[in-house]
Length: 433
Image 1 (cartoon, one colour):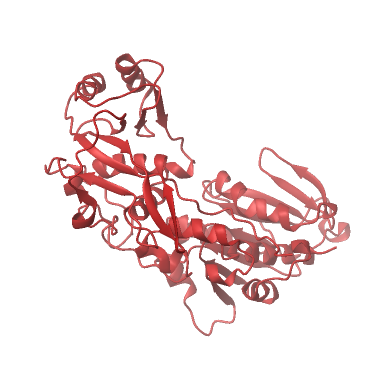
Image 2 (cartoon, helix red, strand yellow; image 1 turned 90 degrees about the horizontal axis):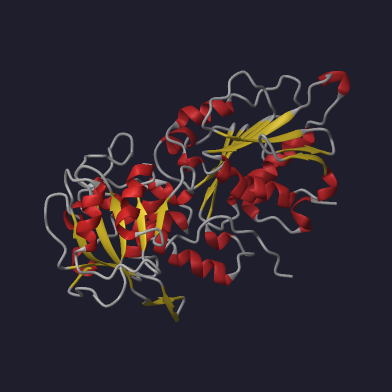
């Protein structure tokens, strides 16, 4: 009986597993095997600390896997944990209130979201997954401090994720510190990754982010968020086809924005092959200001574009209220699909949406799947102007909400995330045998 179904570990995974460093970081590209490596190191610590009634009494030794949300944990590291451990070594499992399993040696593995601070708990192993999504090092330090059970034979604090410059690099880049191990993995390191998965990943990363998302190298956060936008390449003469349906992507409210989105199939090249993939073209834009949602929708309906309730969708801000949704339905009826992403859905997250837009503008193979009509307005807060103004705070790395550029870019983000989501994460390692 063995972990990882008897498959030979990748060299970087082996390095993580055999290290005795207290802090271990498994950083790298999508599909590089970084999560598997971190979970294996986590499990080693769990098996090194069995339940002993003479030592623990009624308590059970336990370890923690956590992430920015329970959905992130379940979709990544927790799923990998369940894949790696043979069913015979899991003697009990809990689905709620939070996922947990009891291993055959009596050690408990628990899953948590980092949204709530954990104080006072002492465990053996901690794994913070998708650590690049954390806002700062405070959350990490809180969980790192949990790996301190005085009855333990071993302890480890693990993180896995994309190597994004900032607090992670400041914390980890300490040459000569034997108490820290940082392992970087590229997509090419994973010899088990199926070729078709690798091709999908190349279509799911912008050219500017390929070094990090595919190569596993540190990504320095750029000041301009939508760094793939090139006015000469992405602003085109195509006025759109008024005989074909459009969808609406809306950031409703004062200084609102409504984009008219037309689906447009694109012919792209990936690994030498040509294929057809979804794309979109922004054909028109409205900039409603200080009018009701119902008035804005009536103006959009009267714009002359074909909005067909059977095929068109209306994309709205996740914070939109019920009365605003009812106002949309009062104009377009109950048949049209209104899409409002829920909190916790990866497609609602700003950074994920920015990655989607950058990739749609230009992916790792120089393919363009997002264009804008030259007829769009050139006002101060319109999309054409906002694309180059949408930027980050240089100190924190957070996107700046300036009430000028962010509304148009948010509306664009809703559309791209819906029509061209990224095929990222959650890839398993398959044997070639």
